[in-house]
Image (tube, rainbow, N blue to C red; front, side, top):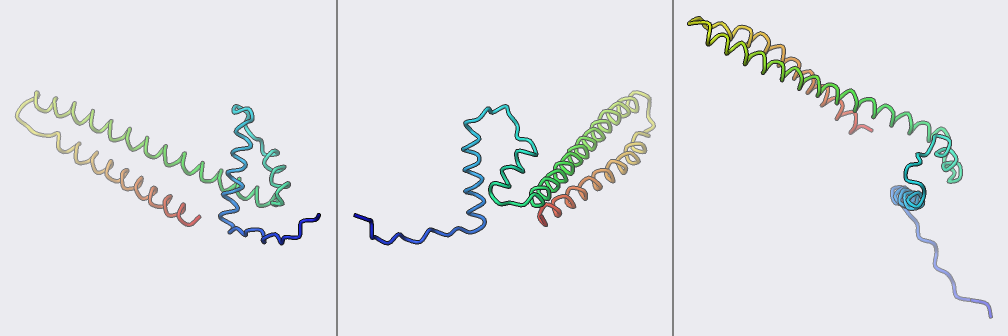
Length: 141
């Protein structure tokens, strides 16, 4: 005897839910594979074609990700540069302070400390402005 019960309509999903479901299903499917194997660009394009996603959409996402990665590298480099500058300032000013203390009654170390300190302050300000600019761009995307 044939099943005459009506089936319920399939559930509908928002775009965000669908993307999460596909992301999780892909992660589960790839979890059983060789963990050291990286997917190539061609692998991504083949998967996208099977799901009906255009190659242009995949290329757009890849370009966007590459830009974000490049920006993160630039920010890391800027932080390291600022930390290096501050470390150099601290070590050199500490040494000059010791020399000034040992050399006699005249007090001259404040002049290089102020001059270099202004340069360090401008470097810190430039780095912070770059960080804020980067964060703003991230929010826009």
